[in-house]
Image 1 (cartoon, rainbow, N blue to C red):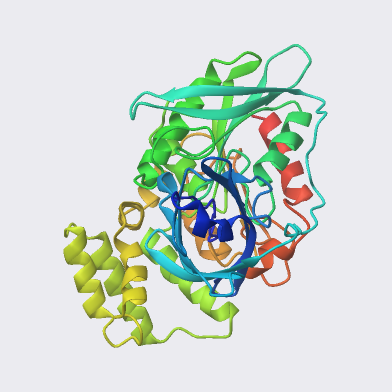
Image 2 (cartoon, rainbow, N blue to C red):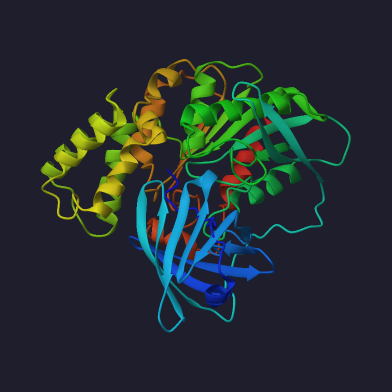
Length: 451
């Protein structure tokens, strides 16, 4: 749900250094996704073999190394296989620009690169967390024994002796590192810093196939990510300074859904859950509301025919039909939409039949909510257009067993990322200096310490 595009480019170049000399150096471009603009910086080097990095400074300060690079004449191909991301471009006659296409998850977007003499300036952030820390940090690895891969993360814990409540942080949809880096923000690092300062042990980890975690992100579903969260929970339960009777899962967006499902399954070692903008209504209904809210945010209104067409698409995507057959039926359903039948339109429609999306559409959290017996902290942003607060809070309260330990609250001025916002639109996220509401973090710490 976090609807941001995570850009960790890649590479696939090798060959004639004579013609390829023109690709050496820094290249800058801007990816345009609706109203969102994401600057990218490529650096390409050659010292007997090709190497280089890619940075999306508004999302993450890290410079990600290319895994493969290929150059042939005036053509360039870059790719990060485990993320399903690629870029293919051709050098202009003047050797000053590269015209190409960025692809991720079946979605293709034109991306033009120009030579750059300086790095892109990242927006100002007021909640940067930098060493030295006044608590202990430990980089760890732990296994998901079901799927057979290792996950990597960081534990932060108080320096003083004793045992403390503990929490696992689970990110929203899309490929995330352990800090849930996005738009130049690091919300999980900010949150871990704050909670650990309040004597709470925190484990945050890289999604499978991301950062230092093994596994294949591109083929994973919400259920697979739930297995990773369960592995993290079991690992945390056996760590020093952790009070085994006070361990919880804190999830953002899709991570909140995962926390809800784990609690509904009454898994071991789970004492409480925290859901930040976690959906509580069936996913097909949620996505329809999300579409309506996003359209309204840009001054458009969904018509009855739009709604009917989207519902048919969701039914087909969620069906048991083979992916190719479902794709063809969705394509036919959209034949009257201008541009839907050309290559780019059809390629974007392909995102509806990916394993993650098809699995996600089939999820109904309500039966899981009804089986929850542990305390729940659920927070919603009043300006959230991705998981609208009112219908999700109402559904949670309607299906959740009454318990005085629950804390369910909508923060009127916060968006989906729990920043103070004016509009709540996705395009606003990157312009905001705040990473995470201090009020929310204070409420979280106080509630966790009472568990």
